[in-house]
Image 1 (cartoon, one colour):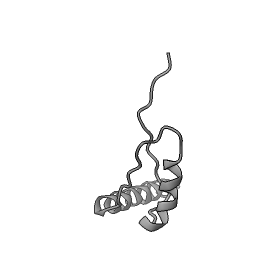
Image 2 (spheres, rainbow, N blue to C red):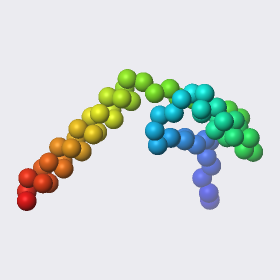
Image 3 (cartoon, rainbow, N blue to C red):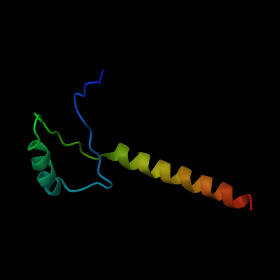
Image 4 (cartoon, helix red, strand yellow):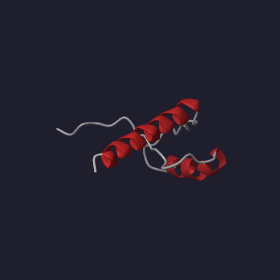
Length: 68
């Protein structure tokens, strides 16, 4: 038996301006069966998470290079 989906989440490769996203939102709304599309704003938590990930990645790279 196939599982049923109640929705999908779309993530952009980078933050985009809200007015630039409107065309994408409108296009998604045109798909059959779509009843709502809601934008999620980027905030301070997003920025902090990205910076933390970059820092951890740099640290891992330094550890790798120090082994040589």
